[in-house]
Length: 294
Image (cartoon, rainbow, N blue to C red; front, side):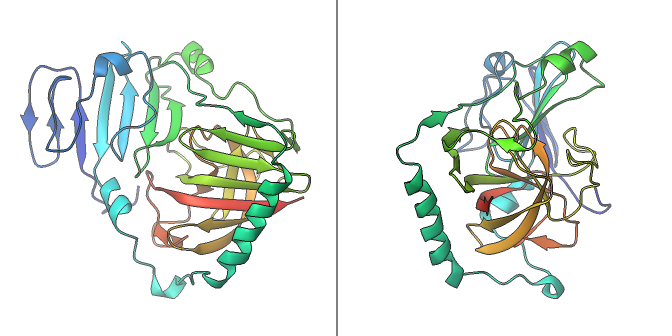
């Protein structure tokens, strides 16, 4: 991470003490955080990955599969206020074009209304030593990966998700597919639409590398689609809109990922740049939708 960026953390373990400082709080599983924050049952999450936690939580299972939760409290900034755009790279909201886009999404949905609606649920592995789960600025899952410094190679293989990938190039049959906390991908005879969460990734964080499934070195504007559903031709241009800011960008499918609770994963766009009206953060997540035609 860029030097000078300050991050505050709250760590939760199964310890039987409370340690207070300006940046870190450690409590046992029966304690309650500050007002409004629920109890966390670490005995339960030892055997099952929770689908949501507090914004910015990083859940790590140690060598004994004991869970520790580290909170990146800077996630609150993304949840409550929009990032300030760099004036040299100002993005203009597309207000006028949204109505036509709304109609396009309705038309695609109408075209498959008599086709199956398939709920894929959550495709989550069972926790194992070294499993790490990163939660976004909205509290939902951004990424799951295996820390090779903790888990064995066998555990890494066992925790690999999802269990299936659409052969390249291709996609599932026409219909509506839902999963996670309300993600939806619709495939028609000539278009794909996705509505739900946008997440982010960069090399060196969460098990991500520098090269996508396209064998291209990834850069700003490259995205990953959910590999169980849609594995479009590499370089496919995709129109993507951040729903809170109404910023529309053309991005390019050059990778695939598990995306357990997102419809589009956006590659790192730099610390000082703006994309979709947001400055980058490793736990950034926001509402969005995308489409492309084929």
